[in-house]
Amino acid sequence: MIHLRRKIPAAMPRLASLRAAGSAALVWLLAGLAAAAVPSSAAVPPRIRIAPGERLYYSATWRLWPAGHALLTLGRRGPRREITFSAASTGVVSVLFPVRDQIESFYHRHSFCTQSTHKDTLEGRRKLRTRIVFHTRARFLQLHETRLQGSRTVSKNVTRPIPGCVLDLFTALYYVRSLPLKIGEVYNFPVNEGGRTVEVKLVPDLRETVITPAGTFHAIRAVPHLFHTAVFHRPGKMWIWFSDDKLHLPVMVKAQVQWGTIIAHLTRYVEPR
Image (cartoon, rainbow, N blue to C red; front, side, top):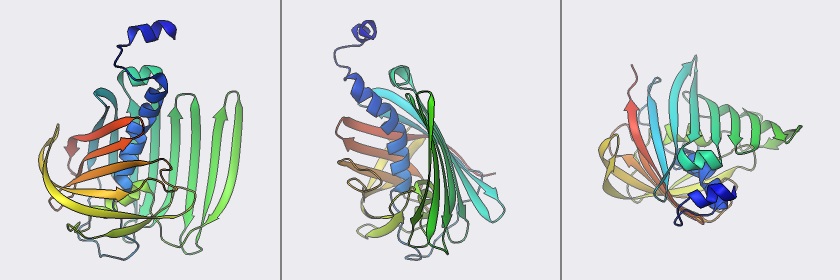
């Protein structure tokens, strides 16, 4: 490790910060992007339905360093919709703190209520498998978690109450894209990632032109009040830009946190066939 540090330029932040960036640039940014703007259940009727088959590719940078890439896809399983999310660290971040995350989220295509989520997380030495089943009508969730700690495997099973229909981070993305996102309006929405349900507020505040590897977009910037909650415990600020058209593609995310600024850009969009 001493030899490796000598190879890193003086401008390179400390290893502890790199570890934070490796995880957060991929998971915080893309997950935060997904949770950014969902009004509470039945607050506003959906305007459009996103067709299954689309693919959204992203790249993340931390300060001036490439941090990782991610992919979001939408599929169909009968009356359910299946969202898959994969993320991986790249470059120096990957050498010092490898990240490999795979997430599946299932929701009902009409109500948008999350039915279940499956998460396989590898971040550094941390290996975690999480399965959550949401029982909307009965108003509770079941969480099963398996964590690899060294040579030991630690498991837990928990049942927690929910207020009814809730959305996980990734179902939230597809719900918000079907909404008007009017400048100055306030959207309040329930998010649950296996713990306490959190009401999050989002305010679209202005229109801007955003340049990304996927193209130049007229976009709506939205500010989610997402930090200091059960979703993200730490302080910080975040801004999300959605394309100002019927698709509301999430084209860019910017977050300012304790260890620096991280940005995710849309690099490629593949339309449904």
